[in-house]
Length: 206
Ligand SMILES: [Fe+2]
Ligand SMILES: [Fe+2]
Image (cartoon, rainbow, N blue to C red):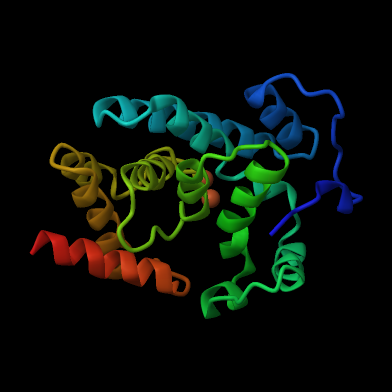
């Protein structure tokens, strides 16, 4: 699978590369995604803090945070077309809500535009909305950092419970958040990866 950003004529791309952070900022801000740039900086910081607390590589966590929503520069209607072009099967949830593809497409951009080759980083970016069964500590850190530093106004309603669960384990915190999603009916359409993550996390708790 490969993504070529020059294919999207509406994108402004700088030919000069500086460093990962500046390149990420430029790609987002030159393409009217300043709000996403603010969000990803907060997620990167939250991921870095969680990584330090859980003895996970904090540099990897920071990179995950910076790049996890980089596909915001791609129009949602192009996301489905790209997956079709790459002959990727869609989950019914992605078919109904193509925005759910943004996690996979962010991982593709991280690999092909930012030249990130670490499979642990690419995995965490590719599942930051849904998790998956048997998530790695880095997968869980990015998933949680994205929920702690959410992209909406005010405090997340689940924050207190999630923070309390974090004092126990990453798994417990992920389960707390997914339980919240199912309980509150906040899910647009449950992705099979989210269902598998939920089953796995419930299984290891019992
Ligand atoms: Fe996201
Ligand atoms: Fe995000």
